[in-house]
Length: 223
Image (tube, rainbow, N blue to C red):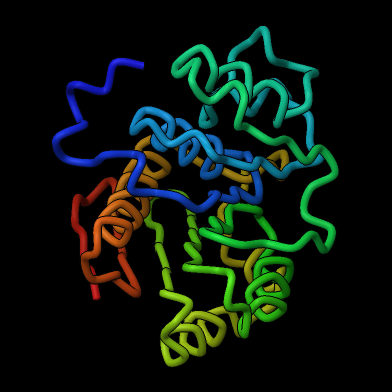
């Protein structure tokens, strides 16, 4: 892949560890697309779902992907963008079911209980370098992150998940047909913030613990 547009800013060989993207829906598929355009190829994709028609509106899938496993459809799309990732992409079509993790972990599954389980399971791991979490409603979203060698950051990261999946669902807007509402600008804005946070961290910069965005009353706050 020709990286001349970005290579002087970020050299992908700086990243020697694998990236795990757990959940390949709106957030996860967009994170993956951002990363491969930076030349990052050591990526593992986790998701057990198939592409449905309503996924096309806010996820990195096409009409021709409907019915395919998300990890397989996403892998096809990513290799079209960056053929260099063909040999290094790994697919886990059963989702995360307790596999060992190392390197960098993006928590993009739409279940806070599972995200908390993953973060708690690996809170003392010397092999994880950082975790990145995303939470999104319709027009606003939050990105949380922690450097895994900073115990206070890890503790705060896990504490931010002190609510249940059912409580989260109550705060999520749905349509009259009980379909979760989600729009592309919110997805793209919060992913851009999260991926930028990740790239800065890999480059040796400070990691932002929390980024808040409002996509339709444009505002960004970072802490």
